[in-house]
Amino acid sequence: MTKKERNTISSINTFIVEDISKQQRVVNMLNDATQQIMVKHDGSISSIIYAGLDGTRVLSFVEWKNKKRLKKCLMTQG
Image 1 (cartoon, one colour):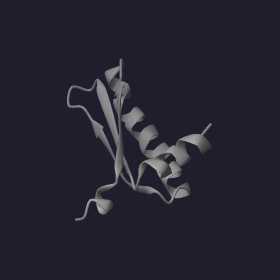
Image 2 (tube, rainbow, N blue to C red):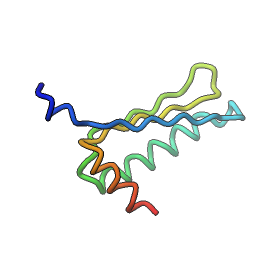
Image 3 (cartoon, rainbow, N blue to C red):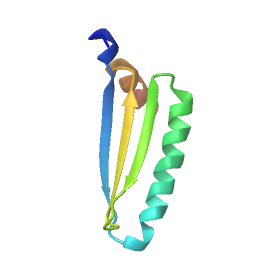
């Protein structure tokens, strides 16, 4: 892979879930929101939502083709 091909950027967010019984709800909400956003923007590559084993954390990992496309998505969300 050339340097030009490795120009991807990742967004990683951690969410703290205070009520352990609601962790799956947070996961589902993030999955739905991420899918809706990624469909609208051609710069998205992939997304993964992780649920922490202790039930208190949810991590969102989203990969974009480049910084410019991520910024464009963020600017159109507001």
